[in-house]
Length: 112
Image (tube, rainbow, N blue to C red; front, top):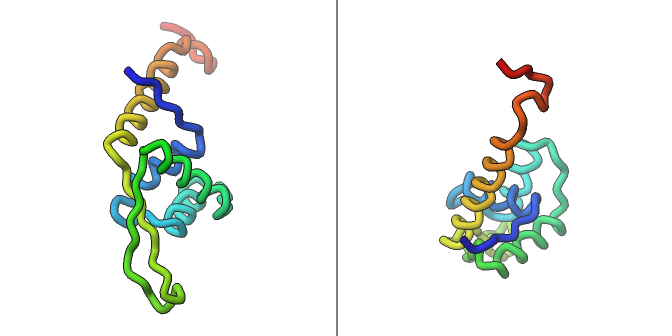
């Protein structure tokens, strides 16, 4: 299987786009990560991650409607591509494999 490259923050952003399914735009993604993970996210860092994910083909964007509240600028919505879903599956499988390989007593639990 092809090796997919996802950084930790990229993975969080990708997962959040999936959670927000259809409503994933910059401010909503930032707010969800901050609320759910209690982690401060700068718009610059988020924008950089979104550009990287789009460049890798893991997400695609579309423009929504313009609104007066946004001075006529449309929101940019993001969704996960088929390649992005494969990258997510690879990441989860890799992590699950590593977690299952940990010795049972690593957290102080004695083997039965």
